[in-house]
Structures are given as C-alpha cells and as structure tokens.
Image 1 (tube, helix red, strand yellow):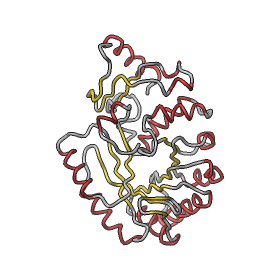
Image 2 (tube, one colour):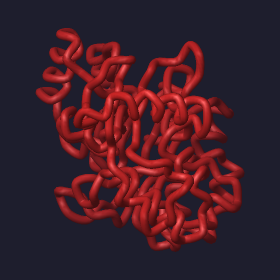
Image 3 (tube, one colour):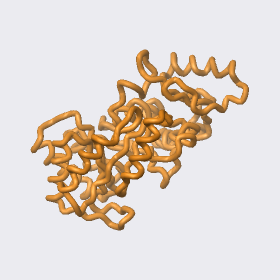
Length: 299
C-alpha cells in the first residue's frame, strides 16, 4: 500500500503499508521519527529510501546512515526503491546503466538492504532487473532478502521461471493469475494514489480473473506481512501476534465476485486498539463477527 493519512488508512481496512518514496526526503523521515517517538503512529510503515539512477553505489553510505538514524517501533527504513529502466518517475524516463544497476543492487544486497524495483515492462526490462538480482546472488550468495519487483503485469509472465529460481517476490495491483498459479512468492498492493487503495477493490478484481478468494486475501495479509518482514508480529490471527484486525460487515466467503468490492469496514484495530469504528450501534452483532472472523477464516 502507498502512503496516506493514518485515519484514512484505517477506514480502508489497512494496518500496514510499504511506502516507496521517490525523492530525497529527510524531512519526511524526521516527521515519522517524531510521530513514532510520540506514539502517534497507528499503522506499520516500511519506508523505502529512493535510489538515484545517476549516483550508483556512491549513495549507499547515505542509505546506511539513514537506516541507522531513522527507525522506530512502527517504522523502518531498511529497503531501497529503484525505478527500473524505462519506468516513468517524477523526473521523467529512467535509464540505468546496466552495469551500474548490477553493482548497485549487489552492494545494497551486501549491506543487507531489501531492494524494491518499480518496473512496468516490457518483458525485456523485467529481465534486466532480474539480471541485476541474479548478479547480486552470484556476488553475495543466498540470503532471506525478499527482494521485490512491483507493477508486475502480463508482460512479465515469460519471466516467471526466473522469479521462482531467484526467489524474487512479485507485486501487482493485482498480479496476473499466472504468477499465483506458478507458485511465485507474491503479494498485492494498491499503487496509491494512482489507484484506489481499498484492498477489496483488487481482491474483487483478482477473484474475477479466476484467483481464489482465500489466495487473494493471503496476498494482502500474511504475504503482505512477509514482504515487510513482520509475519511474526502480524498478518494473521494467532496467539502471540499483535491484534491488527479488520472487521467487515459481511462474510466475504458468502459474496459473489461482483459483491466483494461493496463490502464495508466496520472496525479496524491496531495493536489491539480501535483506530476506526463504524459499528453505528451494532455492538452485539460486532462481537459475533469478531468471533466468526477469528475462529473461521482467520483474516
């Protein structure tokens, strides 16, 4: 999910977000640090530092410094956002020198950063990004890096075997069904503010394309937590995890694909605290819904 105000996030059933920043932003990080210090964050934030395609490896010491400086209970800065070759950014078309890209990704990987690449195709550019990840693997060896390519479209389908072989996560809005079918490591996101960030919008779209509802829910919950390295704290309803929960107004498994997007959020809890409440006096019914959600579908 992309960044927006916590109050708006909560009523859209979101308790964790990945924020792929695309500009130098120390003032933003300072503000997040202050909010975290004051216990005012009601969402988990994975804030991605932006890599300038013109600066290569020379910018990495600055990333390390910011990672050490800006961190808190509910936010971190240990991932790097890269605009892939050919992608459109705030500053226009991005063109990485491929050798510079490979060396930069390898050094980021060596420094234990997770690399998140924005790529919109064509197929050849997905392969260039995968080449960079493969080079990093050759240089540094395997680790639980959870590197990711986002904006994965149908044009990336021919590269599915490489996603699997390199253990690169695929992210989409939603992803093509072929990625789910092939068993690629996946998660779903919104691309907000370009697209609506209500998860049910993409869940409904995925179900209409033939992906099972439970699979689409997982891509937004436990697999989203895996993408943020927080699956031990959140992403599913289990004893010992943080109570990051959403209560919907209907049993999603009883709805048709066309009805899913119309479901509404009744309540959002973060760390066990109610951060959004739209029960409108339906307290008795809400207790039943919480039990059904926890004991039944576990989402």
